Amino acid sequence: MYFFANWKMYLTASQEAMLLGQIKATLTIPSQVSLALFPTALSLTHAMNLYKGTRTAIGIQNISWVPRGAYTGAISALQVADIGIQYALVGHSERRHIFQEKNDAVRKKMEACFDAKITPVLCVGETSADREEGKSDYRLKKQLHKALKDITIPEHMPLFIAYEPVWAIGTGQACDPAEVEHIALRIREEVQQMHENVEMYILYGGSVKPQNVVSYTALANIDGVLVGGASTMYDNMAAMMNILANTH
Ligand code: PGA
View (spheres, rainbow, N blue to C red):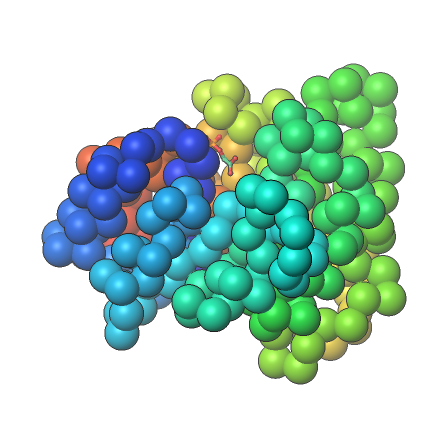
C-alpha cells in the first residue's frame, strides 16, 4: 500500500530537514508500505540526496504546466524530473480552491507530468456545497473526465488518483470509510471506462491519523492514503507505520 505524506507549507526548511533526517534514521517502514514524502520545493534537493538508494520516494506538491521559459516563480515537471523526483500532486483541493486552479490547468499539468515521466497523483473531491446539493457524483466525474479523457498515458506509468473530499481536508472530520469505499469503486469504474488497461491506485486523503488510518487502508478499493497534517509530526508517522505493520 501507498503512504503519501503531503507536508504542505507547514514546516520551515530546517524543520523539514530535521523530519527528513529523523524518518531516514529511525522510522521503521513496513515492507508492504511504499512511502513517498512531499516536502516543500525548498527541501527537494536535500531530500533527494538524503534518500538516494532507499525505498522512500520524493514528490513535489505542485508543478507548472510548461516545461521551461519565462514563468517567474514556477517549477516545471521537467526540472524536478531532472533531480530524480518521482511524483507530483496535481489538482490538490488547496490549489483548486485557494489558488483558483481550474480543470483545464489540472489537465495541462497531467500532460506535463506525462511528458516529463513524472508520475502525477491526481487529486479529486467534492466540496461540502456539492454534497449538500447532491452534486458529488457530477463533480467527481467532471474532474476525472477533464483530467483524463483521451490523455495519452506513457507505457508502464501507473495512474494515481487521490480521493480527497474537500470538507474532510484539515478539518479532523474524516469521511466515513463505507462511503470512501463506495466512491473509490465509482472512481475506478469511471477511469477504467476511459483507460481500460491502466494500472490504477486509488488513495484516500482527508484527516487521516493514527486512529483511523487502517479503516481506509483495509478497504478493498483503496490502495493507500495521502496524509497531510498528521504526517508532519514524527510521532504520528511512527504510530501510523506501527499500526500498518501490525494490521496488513
Ligand atoms: P489532512 O490533508 O490530512 O491534513 O486532512 C490531506 C491532504 O490535503 O492531502
